[in-house]
Length: 187
Image (tube, rainbow, N blue to C red; front, side):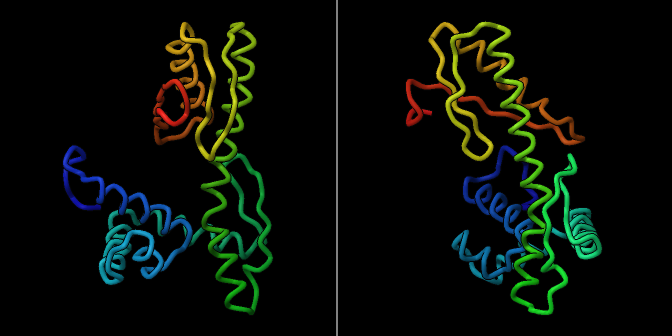
């Protein structure tokens, strides 16, 4: 997006790129992106345009998703879970726009939800099979929080990474960051 080497990306650039990624999938306008990132609206519009220029397949994915959603009345995750959106055909522009934003987002967020659920089921089974004392405590969006005795922390970190990265085979590699600490505030 900024045409710089990955090592040269600043935290502000990363925040803008991450916000732009999510914003585009949520169907946000340049105004919405400017509000989220505290940048000028014209600059936000340039980022959105640059994003689509650099990633034309994302634009094609969004257009195809909306067209299929209008035709079928629903969109799906990669695993086929459906999100029904009858307002995609609504004559009310406010209702239709809201449904379009949901339709653009549901396949991506829904697939992420499918992935974390698969990982949780597999983690539960792995903990039992290995007779570990560690416990899965909490899921927050795409994160899992575990409680482990000190002697299991390293093993758990590798296990969680392996299971989460392989939950759903994709063409794009899934990279999992693992952090440890005495409590959640330290990670």
